[in-house]
Amino acid sequence: MGENTGKRPQEAEATREEKTRRKAMLIRAGIYIFATHLFAGFVLLLFAIGDRK
Image 1 (cartoon, rainbow, N blue to C red):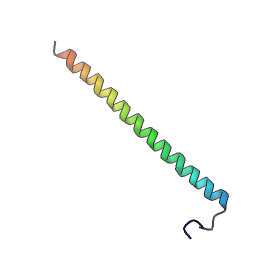
Image 2: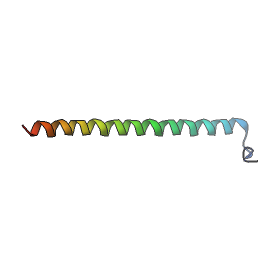
Image 3: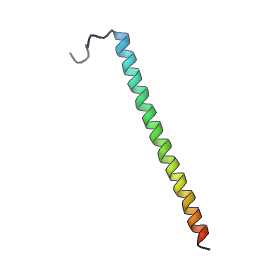
Image 4: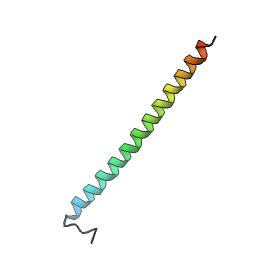
């Protein structure tokens, strides 16, 4: 009964596709945020090493 919510099959398919797209977008955003922080940490490391001399 969970699958039959009274929606037409096209609407159910569109809802499923939207959820899939949203999940993919959140994963991609998480990867971009992680990579940006990793790069920023590397740059800070370079500044810290350069400042020691």
